[in-house]
Length: 414
Ligand code: HAM
Image (cartoon, rainbow, N blue to C red):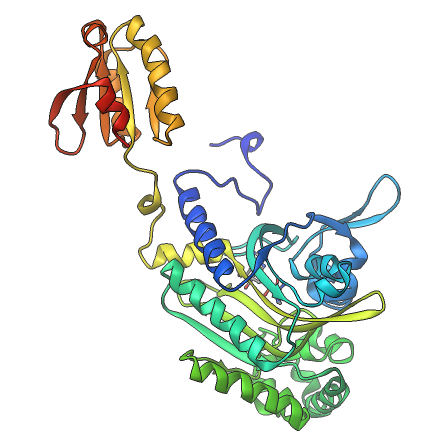
């Protein structure tokens, strides 16, 4: 049994080869696509003042109330490990004045939530996300969803569903809360204990409660959208119509609430059938985050990388497909060849060739075994005889053929 001494904390993972090749593919393709859409990378610290998250995500949300790793540092300051990327991003952009009001940034970073670990739910997980602060209108929301759809295509992930809804504007909050409370009142006893409390605190959370009897009640009452203004409904319609024109299919799900308080207008979630109960691979929406005097409007999304990877693997896309392949392995017959191969390896690597070798004079068989394990395309064999002639035996590992070549020719192999 593996000793705990060597394990990371519960709900956290070491990520290593071969799985890391899939991570790298996701990151590289995302960076490339983000550049096409004009997004610049932003790296904010993992640790922030607790108030950054409390003020933007919302005091009564599960993320803030139950899931944050927060503590006081030695100076008595209240800090927290970021549970998500939007709050820190907007903290940064708000500090950049005018420039920050019209920015497009992306991040690929670890996030921390002290949730009960289960399949698909981790305590350290990773998000690839974007936030755009300029152009607060429905087209920006549609473009953002379009980017996400594009990203899924680049990764080769099929079979996901986009569900969309609206949180309305700030002035819809009260009529929506009043309308829902009134509609829920006759069903109070059918709601779970948590929801009986939430009805006063944060009634929208009743709408997305996973408890079966709460869900039955919610099916019987009007949806939150029905209590919203015409303007808010029109906003959502424009997003959906724009997406239709772009050829992107979305399903309207009025029960979609999203567990973060900063949202206004459009919210969405992407789910994948390959996942179990934790089936959301991504969440996003339009928001307004007030830090300091000014509220920063923005739109963005975050995709859970662990869940994207599980979905990819379920679609038959494996890490091995992205493992580094080819390159050279230098085999040294004797100490002279070993020393000369050190020099040759340095030259080849300097030319950008993937190249490996044993660093002690082992048997030919042992060195060939390592060459196959490294998936080398070609093996370069040198002993005293080849050194004196300035040549090498080049063996093609796929074909099994071999021939003697000059050192100049070897240096041209890439
Ligand atoms: P979120 O829905 O809380 O949204 O998280 C986005 C995604 O992160 C989820 O769909 C899921 O794939 C992944 N995720 C969340 N929690 C966990 C966990 N414990 N373990 C594994 N994966 C997890 C946000 O974080 C917002 N900041 C998204 C956003 C950006 N909205 C606007 N801009």
